Image (tube, rainbow, N blue to C red):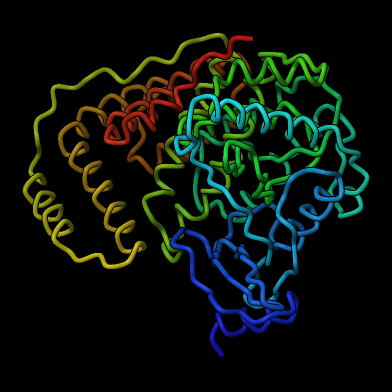
Length: 443
């Protein structure tokens, strides 16, 4: 019995009708669009499947389904849940009308209205009693440390399980976050955990969605996540204005330093989750993970720099010339461009492969100089040059683990220079990547 057949049987049992359409959504995780005919009415459904990789601090979709039900009971606009299928694992829910892309709104006025409605819905969610969520087994933080690090701590077992080698940047960031908890913050709310995910239609918000990262934590964590959603999925209005609106309707004053801290904490969890997929050869890997990893590392370091009161400089240009691999890469690029790509998935795969080829072309031109610069900086940190890059990663992680706060700035500047060099190589990402050089928040 096929996966779709098993899913069809479950949907018909839990919804009480006949499945007349079931089509896989072309995206990186499992999901389906479904239509059920019941009593002469056609019911549009959305079936949210699992990620098929070990990258979740809260595995299983039953938790998310329970959260959706609790939010609906609290008056928050979310999709209605019909049931949770075990095989294949999936949430069967109403397909809410609308789009996420605010550029599709009819006017700037509509975009602004949707953005303000979203902030108001987020504020209402933060105002909910946490008891129904605690009843689902979601822990309520008891100390400032637990509050600030709620999602970091949730991701720690995943990181420990999937880490396959030295991760000096992550170990540096984790150590810094644990030493610099904002201890004056104590308000615990139910939070989305990955803000900015909503749908709208006809100029009005229709639903919030995607609650797999949700937990009880500091409401500033949700506002921080909006800073890194904005570059790729604009909210529809200026973020500073939306943050001021949140302050006005909730009475919660936003501490800029704590907002930067939570931006760094949110980004570090994203990088932690990618450790496994990026290091395990058996994982189905595509270019989007590489993009996420680079953009998240960049935003993480820029947020830490905000907290430390320092600036990150772009990578100085090199006078590189195309190397010996240029011809091979040109042949590969032309071959990929000529390949037929009939399905949406194939087209995304080809686009991803061409992006990686472009990065390799930039590395062919600039890589020798960038590697030389990195070796010099690393030798200065370690006191001597490591035998090879693998040993350098191991030695650097050992240094990070024994370093004190007095070395924070030196380590920040080293990792920032390394990531900014990767930014130069990945410059084909253009504006998408530049958005993760965080714009200052002005309240």
